[in-house]
Amino acid sequence: MKEDGLLFSAEELEDALENLDRDEYIRLFSAFGTGHFHFHITLKGFEAYAQECIPDFREKVQRIGCAAYATRNSRDLANELGEPQLLVDHVLETLEHLGYLRLARLKDGPAVIYDISPELLTRSTGFARTHPSPFIGIVS
Image (cartoon, rainbow, N blue to C red; front, side, top):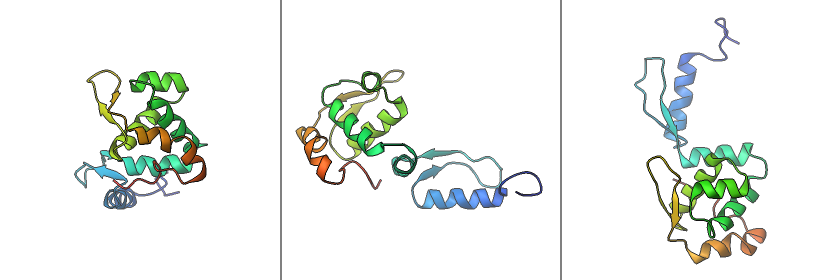
């Protein structure tokens, strides 16, 4: 612990955030030197976090991918599966990034799921049980 009670200095924090930005885990928006840091966690960044910190993440991704085929919006999907909205939104954005479906984002409502690839159902059922998930380990 530092003398001022902090775990690390502002310079160390700035260096860490610059590294995360360089490696595309976050998108850093803040002007340096102000002591305030504004950033956005990228798909790649949340994916790395989720794989390490969310129990049974791979299985949850498979369930969300499979259920997305029969559900028309992200809120209904989260409610149906009992999963946090943030996790469902991440998986759907990843699936969209990979070309398995498309999302229409509404201003103050759930994302509408459409144009779903038939390959999504195949990859999120039997194939995924014996092979690494096609949805995990994205590179954005």
